Image (cartoon, rainbow, N blue to C red; front, side, top):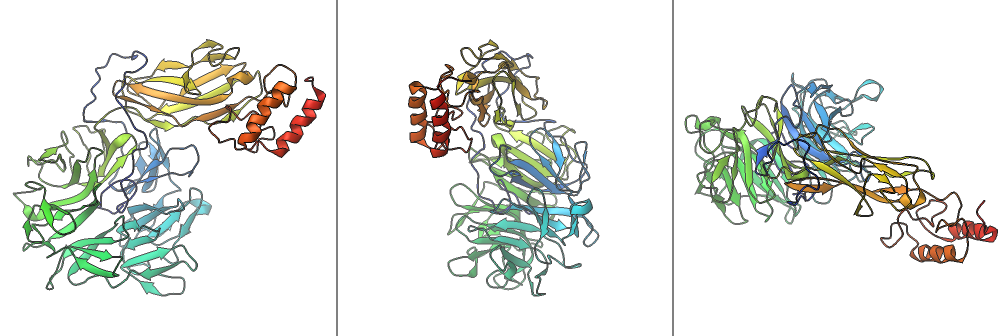
Amino acid sequence: MAKGGGGLWPSSGARALKPLILSVCAIASLPPLFARAQSCGSQWLSGAIPGTNGTVYALALWDPDGPGPAQPALVAGGSFTLAGSVTVANLALWDGVQWTNLGGGVSGTQHGTTAVNALAVMPNGDLVVGGAFDAVGQGPGQIAAPCIARYDGTTWRGFAQGLPQNSSSVTSLTIRAGGDLVALGGTFVNGNSTTVGPLACWNDAAPPLWTNFGQPVPLPVMESPRTVYALSGGDLVLAGVQGTAPGASAAWRWKASTGAWENFGAGVGGTSPLNQVFAVLEIANGDIVLAGNFTSANNVSVNSIARWNGSQFFAYGTGIRWPSQPFQLAVRSLAQMPGGDIVAGGNFDPNDPGGQRITRWNGASWTRLPNGAQATVFALLRAPGDELIIAGAYTSAGGSFSNKYIARFTDLPSPWVARNPLAQSVAPGQTVSLSATPALGFVNVSVQWKRNGVPITDGPGGSSPGGGTVSGAAASLASPTNGAASTLTITNAQPSDAGIYTAVFSNSCGSAASLPAQVSIPSPCTGDLNGDQLVDDSDFVLFVSGYDLLDCADPAMPPACPADFNHDATVDDADFVLFVAAYNELLCP
């Protein structure tokens, strides 16, 4: 995500993502522990994400364990050394509960500055970090990586030689359809000393190299490119300062079908100095929104924001203005809310009815987010639970000084799951312990654990008839949620307690279920599938049903896949050999 770019998870060129958890308005299953009034309207989640001690320029969604049980997490980059109380180096990861130092961060300076300006996620899951720095990581894992590097969750790697000293810095990153990384910066250097830029393309195919992107960047009809944004069809939008040559424009489109740059009609800009586009957003219907500081878009009078439908521009009402100092206005970031509203952040008049550095378009008019932000908003990002993450240079937002440099806003404050329970296998008589954690900041939340979709209760046999003793099956949580895990315990667990477990967190605004966790409690007697201490024809019938299904992931397979005796996720001939041996013995030992 570019410094000053905006948009949806995960980067300034990202496509709109479906929300990770769909929340519906439902009544919580248990009364709240605290009688705090519940409001389900739009609101700041004050203090629900500990702030940083410096400016946040870029946001992205990244899943550090890929297909593993961890939820995709928020990555913040900028110029800061603390995230909450955690020491970091300009880069940090937020999982909904706490901040962690991400890979040791970035260090060293370019042009006297150390900062992360842009983030993106490669098709293989690597996180790409761009900015002004000369090294990434710490200790033995530190490597030289001028201005751009990638992190796989364990190891940092560079992109050839990156950007050499005094070659500017990376200001924007985006991923094209097909997976190519496009970076905007200075002069990118390959291992064979060839140079390209300032707009460069990286493909992981052998040999991985930086290449120039199609025809040269359209200069001098554009000056100081600031943002590059990939559209869903493979085209690019390049935005910056309007040039001085005939036909100059502050935004250009590279057409994949022709391999050439095209203007947006008669162009974007105006007659005033410093006409520029900082933020680009492709919205749900495929139209393109441009924002920054300009007064004309294809000869349509606008105020710093306009929508392009493929053939013409449309104004958003009166637009976004700073009447007293028109040349200092800049819309820096854009995002689209789940209902379709457009949110714009940047640096505009705190006394303007249009907004206090952050405002939203509801289809008819601009309305401010309550109390706005105290200083410039550089990045907007839609987050889990349909929240909006707002980041920048401010030290208060929503009227709260607990929202420093980064804050959360939502239209529906229903809980979402930050940490999921993990699958486990225990022997009969041992204890099962499962934990799940809702994200911080939600009020009047309760939890209900379920086995195979059925609510369970505390006490003996609370999960299954004849099963172990359950505790923690349902509870009201601290309000607001504070990062404490909700733990389900089954002591003296029995084979009948095996199954798929989920935790459902609810308040009066909605609910969210954790990812499923499979609990396996194999019988001590291989082949005794019905638990009668015999391996006989009744067990053979049960085994055959699993053998016919084969794949333990088949929805029709009994919970915990009991016929998978060798635990290879299939019920096949290898399991049949083990079953026959037990069948011949008949009695369990």
